[in-house]
Image 1 (cartoon, one colour):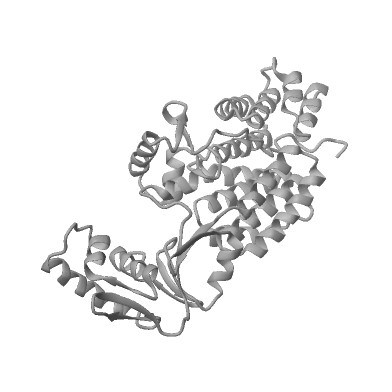
Image 2 (tube, helix red, strand yellow):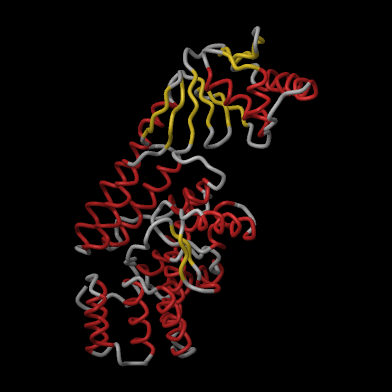
Length: 406
């Protein structure tokens, strides 16, 4: 590398994208294009960054396989930052193998972390965890040690393991401090804030309150009978009954749990579960059938007793009944939950993360936008959605090779 490229690479490694652009902004050779792409990514100009990195990959010759592989990894990180989760994992795997073959362990490790972060975002926790256990972060530079700890924290938070998440975030904070990159420290701080933010609501005995992740973890370990409206299951410690594919039964269980230790009138259950304004004999007959099904499903955890006016829930062993609900519950609450991370998402990324069709997600986004709850920017395939103004994104891209002095 010539002196200007080396200086630009040093500036990017220190988290100074403007300093890097001052040195290579007017150059169109392949290394300069790549560094410009990284700088634009650090400044949050993700579409421009993607275009520059693709130009750089084309500009590198056929013999410069390592440089081309680094461009592929950089473009994948830009796609991840833009929540465009449909990027080619095959291309990323091929780039990683090329980098490993040529001894570029830092960028090869970054490629692995990108795939793990993608798996985490789309909810494939087991795969992400297996991939992470095969990686040793101790010999890596501090920015990648930070990334490793953040991924560990993310998996722990998804699994509702607040103590493990907190420990991982402390490691991330130390590694970010060693890196000396303010934006990396800000990312760790944002993750710590998410851990302390309300994660759910509990409803029981006529009261409703917001709870943090640590409180949810404590609740799940308690002896309470929990009607989990986040995952549509009924649980008591290790016993879990899934009602994910039986929404009517879950709605009945939740209605009875919210009224516990009291009962719920038959007409009120018909109105809430079946949406009928007035209950006729056919509704009451259907209610009896569904109550019978719920009795059979929950027989190991609770009884459903008939009362003079309706029905009541009677736990077999638990002394308390609690409904665990999402912080925000509305028609498109799952979409809002993903957008609440503060990043901008593509509709295809949301569809992949939710396991829904892109058309369904687009209708939800249009409805939320009409209600002023989300906003969009960009056109066509570059269109992105966010619940709040999009913050600057600072990537930890490590495209330049380690400098001779490192």
